[in-house]
Image 1 (cartoon, helix red, strand yellow):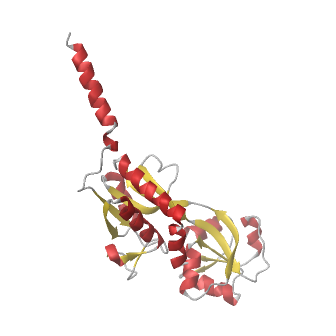
Image 2 (image 1 turned 90 degrees about the vertical axis):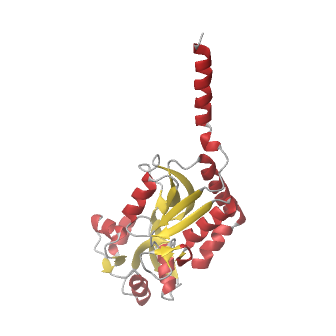
Image 3 (image 1 turned 45 degrees about the horizontal axis):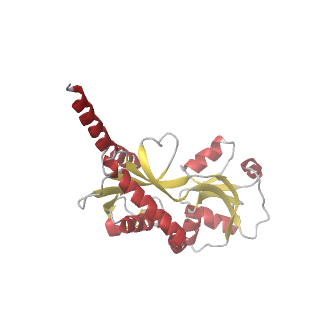
Length: 252
């Protein structure tokens, strides 16, 4: 005769547990956001590997700030190095998040996600008056391609049998392209456009887009679902209003 109350109590506990993530967000709740130097999405104003709050700028920084403000969720923001340490911290510590990062199948169940915030495509740039047309990356092998030494794109080109012209500063590739020293520049988009703008170059066009990733805010798995819903809702509203494109245009 004592079984029934036990069953009711157990069921109630399970129900409370199931809806814990849906509970109202307490006033004291705060998310600690971590990021790295990854222009033009996130970067320190000074160019150093450490910055706090207003010392951090970039496309994703502006988007994330607006998202949290609209959702009325408190946060702090810190830019640090190296990325591996930031990733491990957000993975292990409740109420931590990192941005921006690719949402890969391997990471899908490790975090809760808000996004996409923006793209990170691998492209080939040419001068705007170039006659080069490409359907595949393989077709680019007959041209002189510039890339950033040590970058994943440069390493990918080498693996594919390219012999790229490598520079220690990626901005030099934009200059080389305009001068005619190279035919194509392998770079990220929008990163390539941002770097070209930094050295006063705007007359470039994309002739091939050969890889695509969307970039996200990754939140610790224990982040309440209501927090994620509010943040995602704020982001979608910004997208509908054209606010995200407005922020992109400020940097590009």
